[in-house]
Image 1 (tube, rainbow, N blue to C red):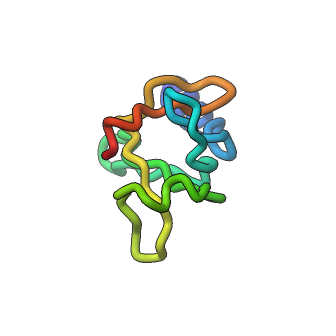
Image 2: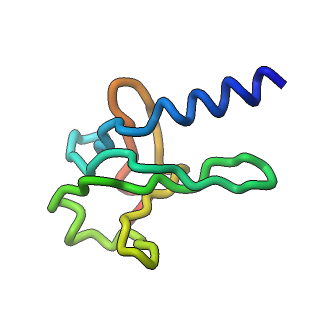
Length: 89
């Protein structure tokens, strides 16, 4: 049970972190995270303060126009959330 609490705490720690590609291009910040309620699997990062760099990319958006980055593209988490750009294009 404490593992689940730790996982929730860890995913909350992602909020506000800067999202960058492996080559250092900034996408924005983690505004929220969607997850599968049944399994708890993290599904997508909802970006806040998106940069103009992502305007020309074909990244999925929700009904409100928020940019959605698949969590499966995350390759590292530290001071930044690093994503593999080739996994989302």
